[in-house]
Image (cartoon, rainbow, N blue to C red; front, side, top):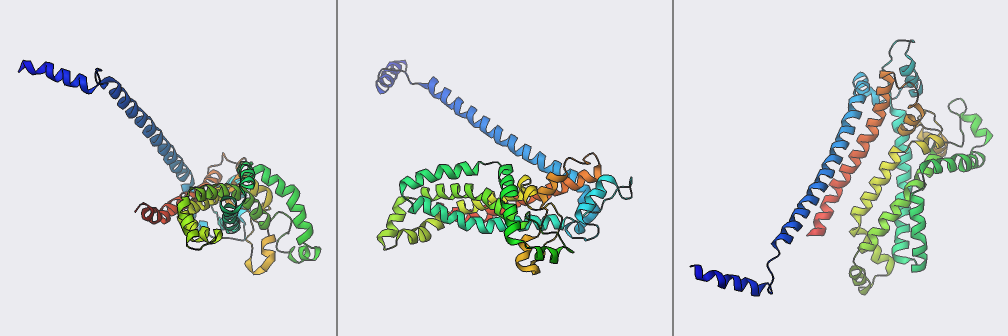
Length: 350
């Protein structure tokens, strides 16, 4: 039995070329892999915990406002207006008496208008621009355009707001708001250059560049053989993109739309500078004048009021309720896109 040991040793030596098996090196590599896996899993867990803490804290601070108003929180009331309600919550009404009533519909409506308008305009424009850059543009032009698009995506929101306030608002006021129109609507609302139209334009300019970047990268990730197969079947470059590439990049399109919506919903500084800072509910029956009426979206209300009266519990709860609506809306969009995209990804895998 002991006589077989040298034979086994000799076989092992021959198989390894005269070297001993690198068991120590392999175990070290395994330990490194396990350590890296542990580190990344810990970072992911910490990120989830931080997000959960932020959501829980915001909802906890906002709960008094929701509890005091119930479903009427999402309603509207002309007298007092939302701005007056916030003033009462800060100073008391009568002075020294807590005022809990809050109707957030004007701010929610302003958010829906500006975000919805920016998405409706921005997504088709971004898709067409990304198709041109990725599929149709000469390579030299595409190489020059892409860095410019990425630079525009990094422009701070306050710069867009400043351009809108100082350049575009005076132009809109001169070109689109006549003295007669201003006089006609003066009993209801003051028409100025800062309005829904300007807010939509600024949000569109802010969200389009990174949508173009996302869509362009997705289009370039489509296998070339697929597009060439479409061309072999008689499709031109445009139809091959529409019939083959766009259906493939639907998850990227959904992701880009959600990211753009999330940024638009949470944008406060630019909208505070461009939408008029008036808690007014624009009337669609006013036709085109509807876009020239002011608004006060949720995020801009937070920006304009966050530095005043935050030591008052009722007023702080009102502000946290706006933050909660923004946060829950963004999370709902993320969950919705996962639900919509999941069947597409499953089909792609199969």
